[in-house]
Length: 289
Image (cartoon, rainbow, N blue to C red; front, side):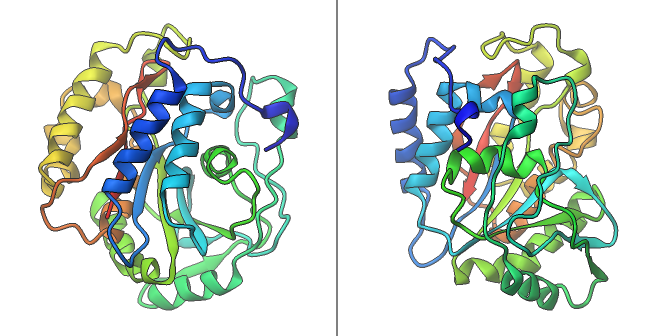
């Protein structure tokens, strides 16, 4: 991890050590034999690295998972049609796709190895779809910020692909087609935020109390995940409470459907590994065995 971006002192009452142990236990219990899980994470803005609680949780989660051969990540911050594969070269510059933060966040580096073999596998599995490449595009903050915490040595090959649309069914189908990569040790990550009503936030402390719209949407999603109700989740724009506040746009929720598709879910409970709120937003994150 970049020296200037090491975690600051914890800002939460909850002890990072206890929270990390709980995350590790949940992740271990949700990991089945022989296959890499698929996960959906809240990625946070660049200051995530300053939150010792969340850093401890993400780091513990990564340590509890099998060591991935490579990582395939879909971020809320890259929408491009047709589905596009980012650079497969090592050392491609990061995309600092944010504004208004202190200068040190724009000096972050994450020099993960390229993943050309994984890119070829992705193109093969999606052969029935148009797929293009963008060789100059590096990882955006929805990808590299959580990976800096989870795999700080940047020694796992990483490939990012775009979301060609925000349609849950299309993204679920993409995830389903990519699911066989899990048998090759590929960790498939959907990176977003379970609630993301930034225009409606008034308190930007890490431990700010969550607004009612955030807790209501989170409770609804938690229940649907506990019941493995993919149909309910897919129809969130009509069935979820407070959805226009929780997701004025849906780009931070829909990476979840890539994870669900890759997980080959069939009605079983989908366990939450991380719960709670960050700046009032739900950071609920799940693992599909």
